[in-house]
Length: 180
Image (cartoon, rainbow, N blue to C red; front, top):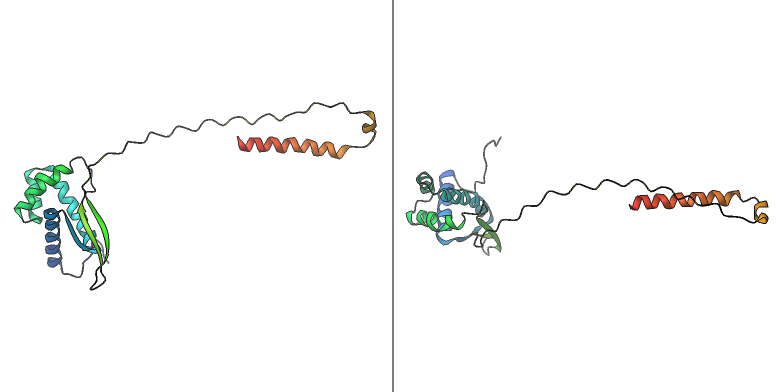
């Protein structure tokens, strides 16, 4: 079972993998963008984001935690003094992974991981949707007035057309009710 084993091994043992990720995150903060494989970039992103969030706190304890990972003092200073203030208003999402294609030698998928450059603009909150208006009552059926019919036509039995005419207005009324 693999309970609690998150992350990819990247074909390395634990100490090699930790050292590689430390070096990559140090290079990312130093150069603000690095080119690497997709899998490494995806593993690097959460680590870099957590360190930037710690740097945004700016206190001594946060600096000591970051120094455990990023061992270069100049890079730590740059992270706390220049990078973290850039992201002061941004609530996460400090990095971006851009797919670059495939490497010629081994056809590995390459990506460039960069720190986001543009300023953060918070989106306006959406207002609550208005409640649906109450449904209107069904329209009253239209009643036709009796039309005077000459006696010659009355003598002939005309029962069927009267039934058809009565059915047609109801169908029209139902169509209007569905449209409303």
